Length: 296
Image 1 (tube, rainbow, N blue to C red):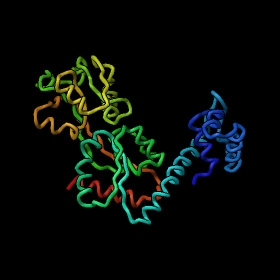
Image 2 (cartoon, rainbow, N blue to C red; image 1 turned 180 degrees about the horizontal axis):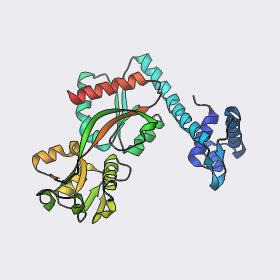
Image 3 (tube, helix red, strand yellow; image 1 turned 90 degrees about the vertical axis):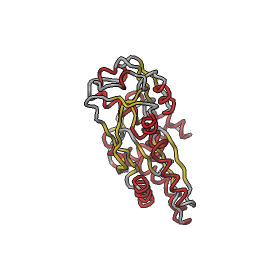
Image 4 (cartoon, one colour; image 1 turned 30 degrees about the vertical axis):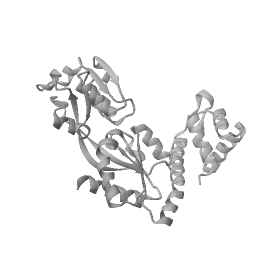
């Protein structure tokens, strides 16, 4: 269990306001201040610099925040860990970003159902930002991420490197011959919402060419991959996604790959979990299992 004074500190880091922290924790504001003072006296450091609008964490405060976040998440996992040991179970509880959750992982889950029918499985398909929060909140054991994230905060293992390509309708003029990336700016761009891994990879690729999603003729944001592919097929615009997500449509000629000069981008699908978690052997068991089933 997390010490309630550390929990108060984490809540204050989140709200950046003593009054809001007191309301959220059903405490008085002086009690919040007393908890923070206790921690500062105990660790013999200053954690908070300023109050109200001038609230900020010192370097020591930032370090304690990271430590306490990990401690809170891991403490919430102990109950489920003990139950797993008691029941000799290996439940699969994880999150995956959209491309991985819809296109890579379903055949793997099918094999797990077939080969290990006693396994309880819970999978959450969300964007990269939401899955990172679920990790810290102890709601999932690990996440399969396709986008960019702060790798220093986690243990990260690579599942595979995946090719990232441009896609359009067979009717689109860009499907007929090789083209420069800049020549696509007159097209409508259909893309995922902010926070998604697919969009993150695209924005980074454009940034490296001194471009952005706003440089295209029109930007259309849609949270559903199948809807994006259908709109591309209808020649409403173009999109960018992992080949894994569109390989069936490409093989049938329903969509076409845009042949772009000097656009050779690949990005890892990553297996991500918290550092120093108490059930690391259980989590790494599932990493080995997923990689094996992915490749065999």
